[in-house]
Amino acid sequence: MRQKIDLSILLKKDLLLMKDEFFMDKLTNFRNDKYFKKLFLITTLASILFFILAVIRHYLLQSNAYDLGLFDQWIWLTSKNIPSYSTMTGLHMFADHGAWTLYIASLLYKFIPNINFLFITQSLSLCFTTIPLWLLCKKNNLSSKICFLITIFWLLQPVVFNVNLFDFHPEVWAMPLIPLYYYFEKNKNFLKSLLITFLILGTRDGLVLLIFGFGLEQILKKKFQRAFFLIAISIIWFLFLNNWIYPILNGDKGSVMALARYSKYGDSFIEILLTLFTNPFYVLKSINLLDSIFYLLILFLPAFVFWKKISFITLLSSFPLILSNILSESSSQRTLIHQYSLPVVLIIVVSVINGIANNKKEFFYNRRSFLWMIICWAALAKPLFFAGPYLGRLDLINPAREAFKEIPKNANVITTSYLVPHLSQRSFIKYPNNKDDMRLDLQKYNVLLLNPFDPGWDSTNELQKQYIQKAQENNWNCLELGNGLKLCKK
Picture (cartoon, rainbow, N blue to C red):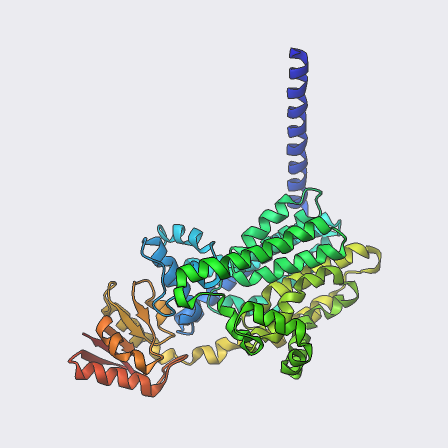
């Protein structure tokens, strides 16, 4: 009996040693792979560059209340154990988009309450998605040359560059997880992939469409049990948020906020679904055809060089997201500037990997592919904004910095939308966007920092003038700081 026990222990030790040796061999292979070394260096430099550019844009007063100021206030409030309700939207942090991963960020804010933390995590998430993509390529037995080409293909996606500059959105944290889902999806044990889907859902409620798409993909692969679990997870998570969490935390503002963008199809999720299935001709008529065709063109254009190699079974998982972007009343969902197309583009990259893996003999590495990626990046990315639109508030930087020094940390502040992210770590902050709120605002808030000559997003010159005039009538102390910026204190 004792010999049998000893034998089993020895077998377990041997298996562990084999696993360790396998892991060490893999690590050694990476260290010795010149293409992986190049990739790691490029990824690191890209992360640093992305972070610096995001900080510069913020310094140039081009960041905004929506969404950088929102997330910074939410995370800061949670880190201070203050109820996590935004004073700009009235929504609870978890009941905005069901992003429970923000609670992890709030724990880090307890030690580093700095908005740059959001920039750096965003830049790292976007750029270091190359590493799980490389692992996925290697799992498909692709050569290092092709692995390098495909991972650079991700970095040169215009939407990756643009989203890094467009304030902050927690769904970027899900980007490294998507190729990891596919990495483990090839295993017999599907549990790891299911766990990863839970992490993906924790960054934004809208990604239930992606998980639903994963389920459709499994149906085509005739893996019906996996499809059932994925589709069930996406539906249950959506219903949990929409029917329970959001109404509890947001009261009469409950339900998924994005549903408002589909109001022409119905006032509730059920009504929207019924319209889509029972009135397809109305749905088709409601689509802006030219706008949608252009959106699809710019979305798939960078992948043109890989078109014959794309796995359309993998690409199917992006269909629910693409459809939701096309049907949306918000044109921002059909651009490469905003975050809505980011997971779609990543699925395109993964579909290229899976497609090449199925046709290795037909694919050849060539420099023309790199040239095409660079041309598409130059045409669709927005680096030239730093030579034009982002320089529009240069003269306002110094007056704004002086004003920030004059505002106490515990002050309740009303300011323009582009100054909100510089002052958002406080219990009360908002920008003026509704005349009906003026009387209550001037009772609750004690600092105004406004610029009627440049009122910012979702505000007007007239409204800001009225706020300042009313404050002066109520004997607030107002100071002209230059370039139209006024600071008023109660």
